[in-house]
Length: 167
Image (spheres, rainbow, N blue to C red):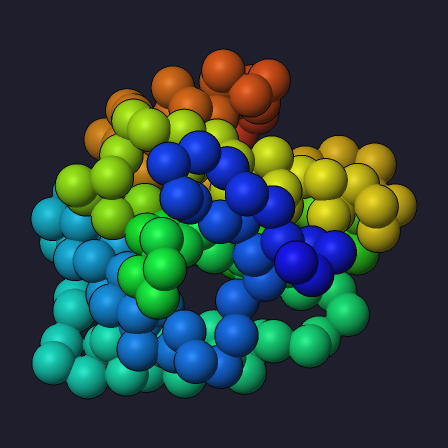
């Protein structure tokens, strides 16, 4: 088993994403777009028929970049969830110093509340900490209460509130 690959429970494996995961990553990414658009159709982009292909292609383009973490939890060939994160320098627009940023974390709807999200979050955190980041940050939709509960249980706390004015 590769160094970054870990057996979880019930045949689940946490591993780095690969090019072969492209289609499933795209499907999960499209689900995330759809859910967020449902939370607030004015704030979040609308999914299209092309969203799975575009999202999958984008994520696969991130593979191998030294500042990027892209891990999946799989059961056999089925990708059940993924986390996409990266290392960023100081961001004066956000008034934030260097940080590890969790961009995406999604678990397939039928597989939630089984420890997959926490395993992905912990894997991303470990990989980012190993890259020397002094803090981790993430954003979550206001209406995504289950995600907020996961992040709070992992030790994250609220620091910013985004407000939107539709014009």
